[in-house]
Image 1 (cartoon, rainbow, N blue to C red):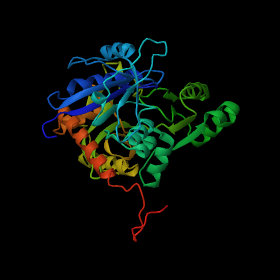
Image 2 (image 1 turned 90 degrees about the vertical axis):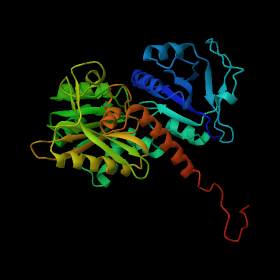
Image 3 (image 1 turned 135 degrees about the horizontal axis):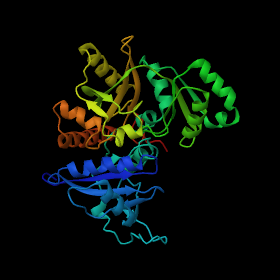
Image 4 (image 1 turned 135 degrees about the vertical axis):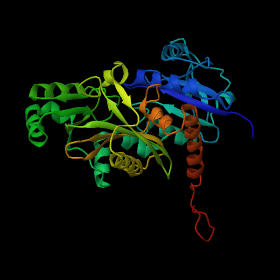
Length: 386
């Protein structure tokens, strides 16, 4: 009804190596959502993958508050029933967080804002559950989320769409473990040193390492294999790191371009979240033609994986050759107070709170459009198929 608040479910935490990053992003989103417009339903996912319904929290929260509330909150599940999508309490399984007797009607959600990073959150799994439940949600759909998470397939799709990417190879963990020396020799011949090793399905630079020799390569492969069964090895490019935010559904727009100046050798986890010397330069001090090229490639990358809502696209700019390479796309970019995605939009004239409003609007627009699909087939003669 007109004038009623939207009930927004904020989903955070998750069973991935980016659990802590999700808490940081969620704290910023929760604190910035306008309580005059929205009633919030806070759902945290613990490290074991269980969903917890948090109690009402103050308007301003921090990651520590969310973590503590998550530990004590009752366990719930999302009903995959599009006729009555709601959170259902589950019996106490001995952990003291029973959720029987919840007011389920009050736990229905008009739209879900997944503030999840990494596997089981950014990879299409949660998006598939929300599709089953018929709930609008912020961000990319199942396919785009999966492609955006899997760096190996992402690069294949980008290449098929004519987008420039750095030379790379994909190695399965099983092959690495049974033929280490042969694989290392193949990578050295194809890519040389320096090179980067990363898990195919993870973000926030978790498990990423720069390698200068065989010993470092072996160590990096072992470490990345702890996080995924598929490893991506890329040729290192002497470059500056540029980023661009994209917003929209079928007619996306790009923000101004920013530059990452990491405090360390490369933009690793510590540089992103722990080292205050890392700088985000907005707008990036690059020639206008480079900025336009980055914006164009960002939109093309967004459309290549059929993304929706939001994405941050990362680039390498080789000053020696002038070449701009697409590094990767992030379908649920960081939303902390210092994250590049919201800062780029703020510099483009869209402040944080209004950005959140727009993302919720886009989620509902996409859901309405997707709801136009027929779910049954009736031939032209009007006789239903039996």
